[in-house]
Image 1 (tube, rainbow, N blue to C red):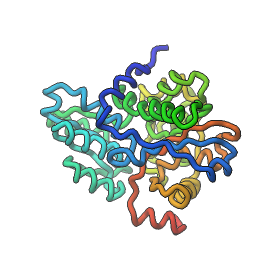
Image 2: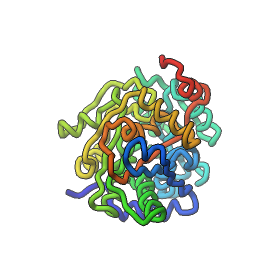
Image 3: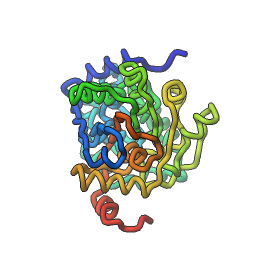
Image 4: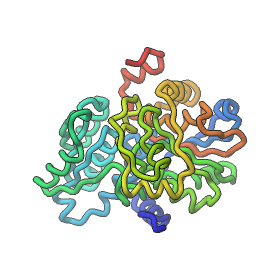
Length: 329
């Protein structure tokens, strides 16, 4: 079966991103290894430009706009990280940007998106359709919609995280990976990473991690068709998608071994570990993959495991509550 993207698309994206995106570090932790009985390699996309892997896909997409598209600008809908990624990429490439964001998105993300120069239109994620709003505005203004995950250029850009991860693990000790763990919202990150990881390491097993309250992709893979759910109520705001896409889904069907879930409490525990032991600020969605390894949601003992920390954009007041153990409302 022909997939929407190939390793060649990811390699081409890496060239566009060279010198623009950060080559984020891969860190290890003896404590984490001892706790899990595995050798864990953390790809720190929380240290990427604008604080998340999303910059990779956004910039790769906008960099391929025609002159006419650049003049009219980019439009995106996002709970936060894709919003910031498109806003920053548009600024770097000298084009206007408009972002449709839920009104209850973390204030930090809304503020940062505006500070990157984008116009922000707010909506109610529980009563309004963000895609419909985006289509209407794009039609009125002639802007190009850049979806958060269901776009070949976005997926290819996200796959560069896995390309770097595999290269960096080899630089650390010359070895490969038995398992790659990545968070799953709409599937853009894990789709791009799966294509590249399987190209470089054919025997590497790819596993996605969703919040327990929002397991639409897990349900979709089990049923063999895209399942739509209500907006999940989870602290992992980057994974509050209601369904995957018609481009990301076949990639996951072909290359992802399984999808596992973790609870919000598991995410908080992982965030605390990163803060206390590795001195890293990680947002709830960014902790999904690590939480799966820490809790045993996926077996890692005896394996070499790549873990994508997808982002670090978290409201500081809320972050303090997480670290202090304040009960979640």
